[in-house]
Structures are given as C-alpha cells and as structure tokens.
Image 1: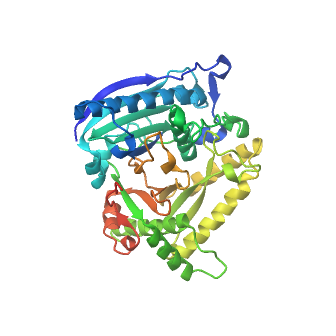
Image 2: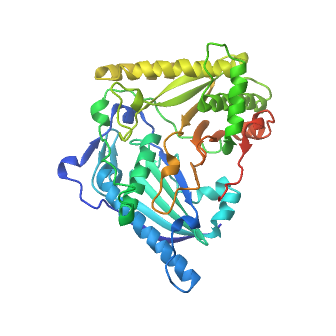
Image 3: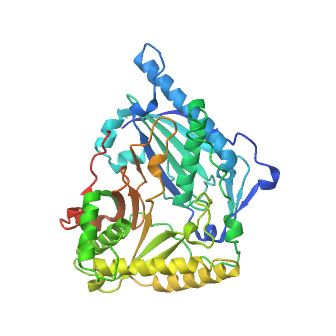
Amino acid sequence: MDVEIVSTEVIKPSVPTPHHLTTYTFSLLDQIADSFYVPILLFYPATSCGQSPASANPQDRSMEMEMIISAKLKKSLSETLTRYYPFAGTIKDSISIDCDDEGVVFVEVRINKKIVDVLREPESKMMSMLFPDDLPWKRPANYRSVLAVKLSFFLCGGFAIAVCISHKIADACTVFTFLKDWAASAHAMDGVNKTLSPVPQPPQLIAASVFPPNLQLALPDRKPPVEGQNVMISRRFVFHPAKIAALKAVIDSNSSPQMQVPTRVEAVTAWIYKHASNASKAASSGVWKPSRLAQMVNLRRRMEPPLPENSVGNMIWFFAVAIKEENDAKLDSLVHQMRKGLEQVCNLAKELEGDRLFLIISEMISRSASRHSGSGEKYTCGSWCGFGAYEVDFGWGKPIWLRCADDQNRSIILMDTRCGAGIEAWITLEEEAMAVLECDDEFLEFASLNPSISMD
C-alpha cells in the first residue's frame, strides 16, 4: 500500500491562550499515568462525504472534495483547540504542560487503495501506516507534543482520521470527549446543523483541583521493552451480540443463585483472560504461571459528587483479578473477583480527596510493586465501551469502523461494535501464545477472528 504525503501543517488554536492559562498542571493521577500516546483511528465511507463538487472530471471532483474535508477539519480543530488549549501545548516536565500554542501536527496523505479493500482485510501492518508515525502506544524521548493528527484519503472516496493523544493528560473518556467536541465544532460550521449539533460546553479542566499533584510521590521505573525479546502480536476478535448473550448464559448457569447475570464486558473479559492464560501455558510447554489482570475503571461517575463526563485528564484507577492457581480460571470465579474489585474501587472513589488520595496511591503502588515483583504474568484491560465512539460525526455521517493501534504489552482493549451491542476485543500476547489462541476452538466458539468490516 503506497502512501503519498500531501501536506504537513501545524494547527494552532483559533484564539491565543490567555497569559494566566499558559501553564497546565497535571493531577496526581496524571502524574502516575504512563507517557505513551493513546491511538484511535476512525473510518468514514465515500457515501458519507455529502454531495461532490460540480467539476466535470472525476479526479478533479475527488480532489476538490478532499480539499473541502481537509479545510473543514483543520478549521474546526483550530476552534476546538481554543477550548482544549493544553492539547496545543508541549509537555514541559513530569507535572505540567506549557500551553504555548505550539500547535498540533496535522499530516494529510493519499492512499492508493480503495477503502472497501482496506476494510475487507483489516490487516494490522496496513493499518499502522494510517497512524501518526512512531507514536501509538510509544514514548518518544524527544517528542513533547500532546496531540498529533493524520488524515488519510482513499481511492474513490472515503477517508480515515487518526489521532494520538498523550496519556499524561488523557484517558479513553477524554479522548472520545475531545473527538465528539471536535466533530460538533465541524458540524456547527454548517448553518443547517447548528441547531442539531451545537458547540459543546467547554471541557472541565479541573483534574489538578480534584486530585492535587504531589512531588513526593515515588513512581516505579518504567523500562522500555527490549528489542527482539518477547515479540508481541495484536489481534482483533469480534464478539457478536448473540454470542455474548450465549456466553453470559453459560456463565450464569454455573454461578451461584445470588450472583447477578454478568454484564457483556464482564463476560467477555473473563472469557479472554481465561483463554489467554491457557494459551500462555500451552505456549510454555505446559508450564503454568500465575497471572494478574489490572482492570481500568472510570472514576468520574463514581465520585461523590460525580464529576462531569467532560472532565479532562486521567480519572481512572484499577482493580486486580488474579489466577493464582490453575483451577482458579473459572468464569464465575473471575466475574466474582471483578464484582468485588469494582465495589472496592467505588468505595475508594468516595475517599479521594486532599492528602488522603496521595496516601492511598502511595500505599497501593507499594503493594502493587510487591505483588508484581514475582514471575507471574501481568495483563491490563481497558473497556472503551459506552463512550459513544460511533457518534463522532464531522458532518459527513458517522464512522463505519474504528480501531486502536497494536500494543506492545499484554493487554485487552474492548470497544463497542457499530451496532452498540457487540464487542471488538484487541488482544495483545506473546507471539507463541497468540498462535495458540487463534486456533483455540473453544475460544472461537464465541469470538470471530478479524472478520471483514461491512460497508452497509
């Protein structure tokens, strides 16, 4: 797949950031967040581009439409950055962003492939070319920008928008809030859409006041992965609504009468974790290893009082689910652990104020380091379900598909399918373990490996 770079621009806020706002301070939860870039890629079909310009030549019409789309996205991004002014700044140090209006790098490219062909076989290597270079899930030493954007146009219409946002200021909720606000700004540029998609309220930049930073916090060292060691492979598995319903029924039939039917996220997470653990054993010549899965939780709605959903920053914590012994990998047991862990996080969220948060986090980091110091395997799981990702409409229709980039660590990322009832799971494991999981007939009873994306 050939990629032609059309342009590279720097998009600055439409209004300069006031002097009294030129330093954005990280919260305590931002402090402990990793510095990698969170990647998301949205696809829009040609039919969502509206009426084409009236040029006689089809190629001219296509290029004119590209210019219209590009100009609208850049102008609306500039307006959005005025409200999200830290996103146009540079990361200064471990506790702050210099809101210097340096701007956002916006790369525009042309792909010599039809979008329908790209989505028919959504292969990871091809998809990686659509993200900003060398940013997804990485921590570039000399890259201090907060946000990067890449716009890709395909043959015969259709386009993709990729964004990478620094995890130092954004969790998944913030990423999708920003995307929806940017889309609403684009919608508002069309007079006919103003009443349908009004410009959203300014984001709540309150994280540091809710979770004050503390320079005394001792953070564990984060060592970059060693080249050539533990080659990691990411794969997409789709759990269709009917399969999720059947899986929930299986878990419920083996659970105690007191336990409620698992949610779709609980059921899918337990199923993946169990089979990832089994795959690891099979890939290790039958040698079983204990493991622990860290499940991320959005704290906004669990605080007292709840925080606005458009609160910017890392407002997440985690609970742990463990398979200490081989017979612990029972679905009902894993779901029970999730329920208890979530309850503990909800109780913790009610205590997160003042120095209390600093003491809780310091203790949990110390305890976590002690638990994770052994030879057991560690997984992370983040659910991006329920954030309205398929509502990101810039004025040419809703996306037909979205995805994240391949990860570099053992991880599970769950996302809604377009219908809202299914789940797409992006699973990253060691190459040998993934080879086992891909051929696990029991696992594939409920999961489909990388099916084509429907254009309908």
